[in-house]
Image (tube, rainbow, N blue to C red; front, top):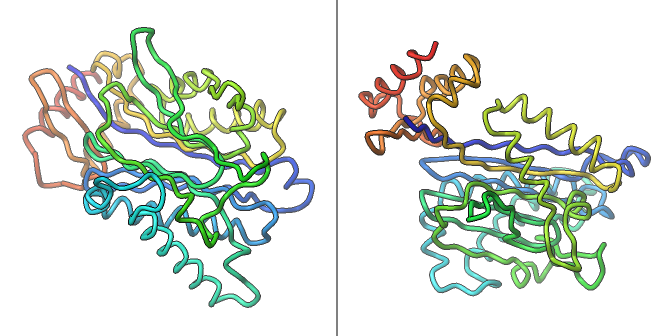
Length: 321
């Protein structure tokens, strides 16, 4: 019996330079899910702007909420849309600007330009995706192919003529640099990763335009592990390895589809089976998609629906106690 479920994990680590200068971490991440839609977002606040950490926080939360609750509407809005300057780019930029303006109005000596930040996101629902990127940083994907697993780049950093100069969602011409795409997601795509320019400068080769395949291991380390355990692993990776080569803030946001046999979950031990059971008990949708497979989808809260499928999967879980 195969069980498929969805996992997400993100982390922001303050850079060495910011520790030494007393600045806060200016990278922020967010995640939201609603009725089958899942959204990961990352934002890197401009290093030269004193309140960019607040801007990045507002931008990530705004976009995560909008995309998770309006995925279907936004997907239709992107039909035949250009890569840059789309209606959705205008809509998202406008709402972020409105929320930044609200924050500025509530705090003395706070301006929108002092909250400048980049934005990267991936939103999925069923077999559809919406992806957006303004500024530097990088979006990657984990895919299966004839060689096994591979991490590929979905969206490259865009710098304004120099490595340390980029575009922000607060710029007057932000819509012209907000790259948004949509489409059907191939079945061999198993996960996504967003990263700020801190990890990017270590894991991305701008000359060859390739990404370090060690990121495969980061996805692999999440397989069969809980959120809390994986977050500690990701923190060690950023603090102990990436920080040796980049003094910038370091952030990553992962979304991963785990699809394994019931026997695999049994071998991971009781705690991991209990983790999956807790998703079901907390109202996740359970669908038996074939005689040999189930999907656990915690973007839905359906305590009183699909009771028969929930009963079946809980029976299978309990057999492995």
